[in-house]
Amino acid sequence: MSKYTTGEIAKRCGVSVRTVQYYDDRGILAPSELSEGGRRMYSDADLKRMQIICFLRDAGLSIGSISALFAEKNPESIISVLLDEQEKALKEELSECQEKLERIEGIRRWVKSVDDFSVESIGDIAYAMKQKNKLSKMCWTMVLTGIPVTALQWTSIVLWITQGLWWLFVIWAAVAIPWGIVISAYYFRHVAYICPECHEVFKPRFKEAFWAYHTPRMRRLTCPKCGRKGLCVEVFDEMGGKKNG
Image (cartoon, rainbow, N blue to C red; front, top):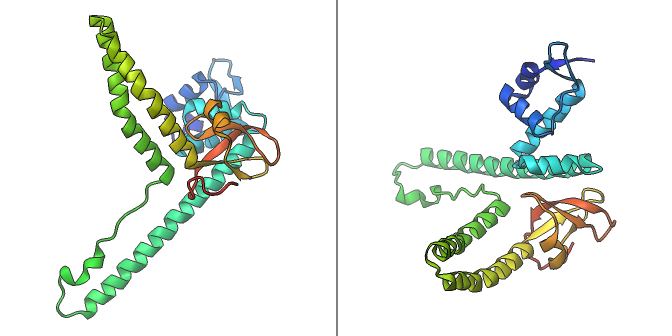
């Protein structure tokens, strides 16, 4: 069985030595053993785990989310769903790029065949680039709408502490509570979840989803089809709540 030093495993995974050490400090990549000189030594299994961590980081998961995922009974089932979603996104991106290439080639051929070329005559050259993930776009919309509410919150706290203006905090609460209800309803109306056990796509009850433990890409829910309770992968719901599972 092969053994790797910190530098060797970092090189194989395309990361820095400090990154490998950081993952060890966070408890998600402990070395299999220590050499007589106290050096970290990693096994083939550790290398595979490191490659999975790198993939999950590239997929946008935080260190806390990865730690929670590995704490699950069957993390490989969740990773499988994440791989499927990543593959689907990449295929869609490749399809979009292929369509754009075909359009460019068509316009190029058309331009060569036209004697009187002008920008006005090919207005369709302006092509809208829509590569942003719909779920990320929705989340950013929520963040932007929450900036004024957050600003009012901190302003009211500071003024309450420094000048005793408690009534501003009351105003913030009167604004924040309805905003929180509306934005939460909007959010859960536009997301669905994939069970890594039976691959059912479902929408949980609002109360269950609202109080469930969650990470930026997953939420601990009970699948209505197979009954599994654990982290489920969050996806954008194209129908906005008009369909169920």
